[in-house]
Length: 281
Image 1 (spheres, one colour):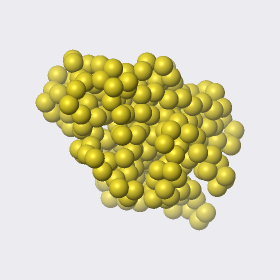
Image 2: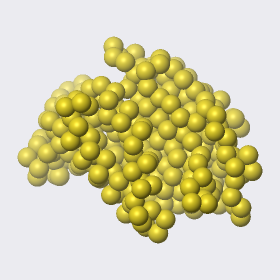
Image 3: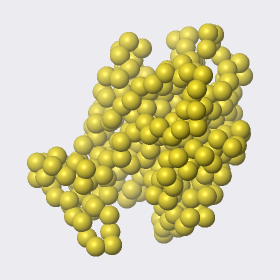
Image 4: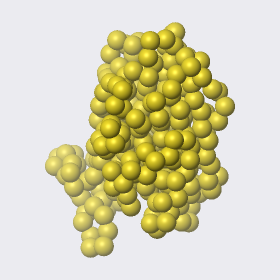
């Protein structure tokens, strides 16, 4: 994209307590469009997924900001992330010259803030997958936990994130004095409790967990079609390529996101299901 774009400010952010929600937005001059769909799972607790989906102007540049925050043991931490994580990233002095380091620093300072406010936020936590799109040309994706970002290029699914599962980081957890349980019929858990090895918050387990993100940068070229961000409620029942194959048939990204969440429900996913689809052209 050679020129900057205006943006649609409607339906750009939200998340949280309702049983389901969806929306969409776009740049008026750029080809970027996005849509989101969030559906409460069958578990007997309030909705714990939050999201961000918006396009803003910042220092003469256009930024697309997209995120899924999947909470556990309450919704206070993902709600905090929804309000603060991107603003903390953009506050970093080196954001425009060293985006990678700025994301790492902001993840760290945000986690420290969450832990310091645990008396208000509680002892729960949250995973996060975030995507920053600069002028529809450059894409930075970061994650902590098992929410996932998948890029479609020429119809091929490319996983942009790493699922932080306890078994894959067992050595790190054990070196920090923790352990990984593998009970029959259950997923691996840190200290028998948490099914991810990295997360924001989780004060009671923090000495055994990491909160530093894995980050991947990519260029948006003519072969890059769309990006899917989703919580593990979708990925537990759907392979990356299956999700891409569903979304590529639907031009409207909101309808694509709703179709993906509906398909996850049809496959009897019991977790909260949240999905954002960003179309680049």
